[in-house]
Length: 416
Image (cartoon, rainbow, N blue to C red; front, side, top):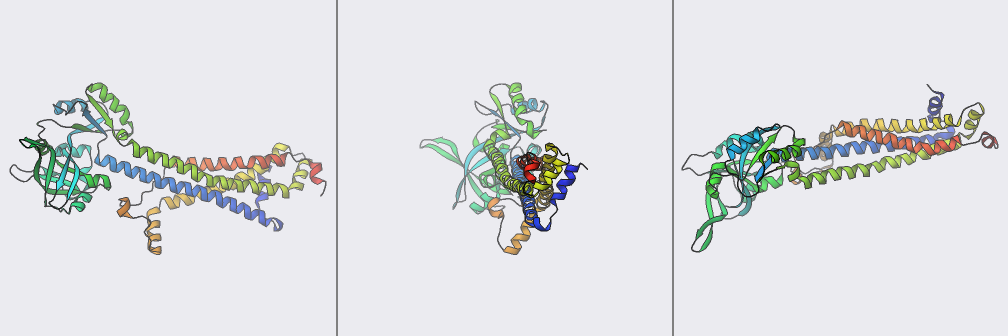
């Protein structure tokens, strides 16, 4: 062990007359630990929310959507075949997208009607996994029977609809009559209810079969676009540009990041801002380390003079106090990492216990529309937080250590 480290460890041990300094040292350790712990917990929760939101977006929507900029997509089976031949594309499915109104006689709600190919939709989206009542296969009704429609849980609640009920679907693009344009109306039967966990989707989406949507909207044998599932969801931008080159105008592809860039940018920005704000806690603890070292230097004036008289260099004196400050920072960081991981990895049961003890609901599922409290620890975040805390602690030791190394032995021993 270098003698600088040995002496630095000795200075951390409390003596009877330096109990106050040792108390400040403990407070500095606690400050670093609390800062690191808060950073790990908050970033784990924000990462969990972000990943949960991405799962819900990707579960309902496709990774890439291919549209025709001048109208509907014609001869879509051939277009799908060409797209699926591109490396990186896993599966494709056609869809129809239009705005309609649902009416029960007493309640009316505007929704987005999606026509889907039941046979291929499950290969691209996870809508079939979100079904809480009925199933998507019920959309394929026999000729002559009331066609089926699948709606979200929140939409069913708003309209007072249950499985098996009927609802009128009204399209503003109706038939031309002597009295003008008359909205087209058709009656559908609720054959399924889904719950994605996203209020926006569960309250505004309704699904029918592709053939029924084409017939009801008078589209013929065309579709609005083609949804794609890809191999790597984080390289969709590059793949979308490749699809644009392969298909050429008037087709264009949009990936899920581009279609949800506002909310994803907001989450990323909020996470970065929270990291900066919570780092200030570690900075406050660093001031505690600096003040502790200043007081130790003042108390150890005679020791510093004796060490210099025995041949210790200014660099060695500086190392002694740098080691002392680093020990405080590293020890606080280790405690903070262990505490942060313990809480972050067991956050949901901890929140449940707190809610039971206090009787206060910290996390309302009706408000946030999540069935669990998301928390995901990322190893790179933990490493970044740890390194940042140690570097801040190291920076806090430099000036007090430099001041100690500049001390002259004669001046230090003059009044001893």
